[in-house]
Length: 156
Image (cartoon, rainbow, N blue to C red; front, side, top):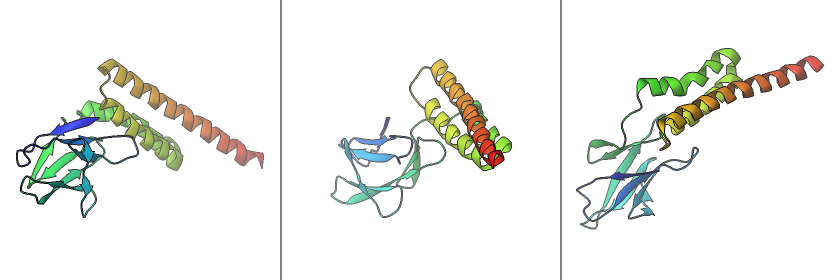
């Protein structure tokens, strides 16, 4: 998804933040083209009207939609997820208590995908239903892999 960024200091430039796949970092687009990377992680260089490069930063967290850092201020691109959305997304983390490392791995990956699903542009019913199906699928995957592991251990 692309999120437009309004920066009056950069007139005539169309600045957007693109949040792509689940395993890629968000990037800044200037007039539809990727901006040059800056000196630090999450920083991008954009040519200003005066010909000098200005730094635009992206602050990321568990939420896939980053915040833009520019000229000492923070710009939100989307409203933060509500507490109940975080709770709905985090249900798979219960697997941590059931199955240690395997449960933590599956629960963490599923939570990350659930957050992205809740940030998508699907209808609300579809987002919550898909996140629920994914959470149940994670439980099924955990039970499958745990059973396979225990079968292999007891077979010896």
